[in-house]
Amino acid sequence: HVNQKNLQQQKGGVAVSSIQPPAQAIWWNQPLDRVEGTWIGIALVWSLIMFFMMPFWHVYGKQNLSNEAYHTTPEAYTAKTQAMIDQYTVRTETDLQIPVVAPPPGSDVYLLGRLWQWFPILELQEGQTYRLHISSTDWQHGFSLQPVNINTQILPGYEMVLTITPDTVGAQTIICNEYCGIGHHTMTGKIYVTEGRP
Ligand code: CUA
Image 1 (cartoon, helix red, strand yellow):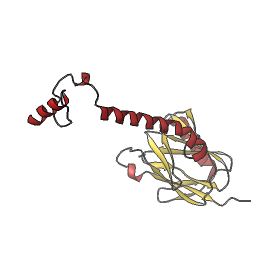
Image 2: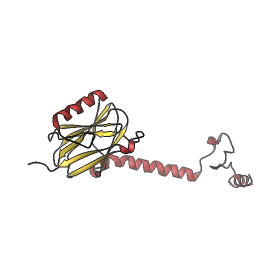
Image 3: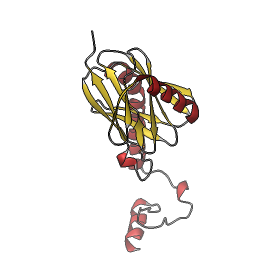
Image 4: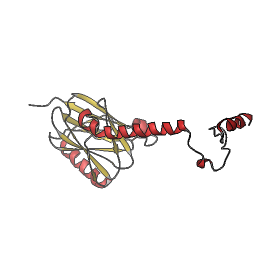
């Protein structure tokens, strides 16, 4: 209390600290400290710079995706995914018999997220363009493709469409980067990229 009194006398006002309750109940009528005002100003200017950098990064940095989004339902999306699986499955993997699906280049390919897997495994050709549809049938998930670091939020009822042209042969790993429950850490998937056939 002695310190607080000294401070009050020095500044000619009422001291406010973060560890003691405010001396005055109506603390928000007190004038803003110059240091605090400066920090609010810096934060505002920086947030505006970052805001206007977003279109720049989109065009020149190739960081932000040009995705499309459509309304769907879990039932309708599951049906479209199953139709692709029925037509283009080339083999199954693991004890769970997860279908590996190789749709023709240029086609629409479907991936669904659910508790707790990405389904099915897609096999795409290098240098070919696909429209990759992604949706969830139950919950919010985070599609994160590694190591290329493509990220997008996946929600039930919304169908995200990314136009992609794989340029790296090999297995790409999909992880879920939005916490979705007790099996979140096991929610992985795969996209294979094979060498394009001439
Ligand atoms: Cu799905 Cu975390």
